[in-house]
Image (cartoon, rainbow, N blue to C red):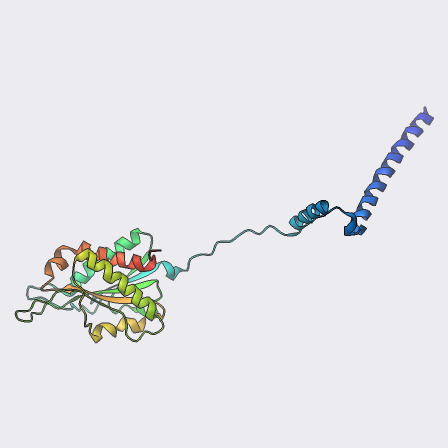
Length: 249
């Protein structure tokens, strides 16, 4: 009986020795065998396996959109603690109330589309180095009469001296000009004043923030539009900002 167990044990030990020896020989063969002794197909497959195991799995990380890229500034002309009404008609209609009504509508529309929108006063302290994807200052033109001539239309301008953002300023102006004219049916007037091209906010905001100032219309000749069609004006400005931020391909 003992002899039989001894023979079985010896047989098992022999098998273990053979398996271990085969494993060692295979490892040595793999390490030291020249490439020429391994078939091209096998070598290619081994290379792929080894490369896959060697390279760590890289998890891509999202690049967040900068805050300013989704931020828009809308200045309500003459609004603020200074209590400046802007232009005033004989019946008490003020430029400031027109500007604010339109500015609020623009802000609400853009916020509804997912943008972060700041409703800014005329001399808002936040304008200092203000950084955004775009800034638009909203105003209305005088209620003054020039005799028999009826002056109608809107004006829009960018800063004359902002070299660093010149191209973006012009693109913003042209986008708003096109959509505002289409929405209001008003004619664009030329001959903008220095009050527009040298508007104080242009000097206060970040040099790379695209900016424009618009005079919605004349408070005398364009009164019906300014008082009764404020949604049309707001739509024209909103569409212009969107045109600039997402130009057609």
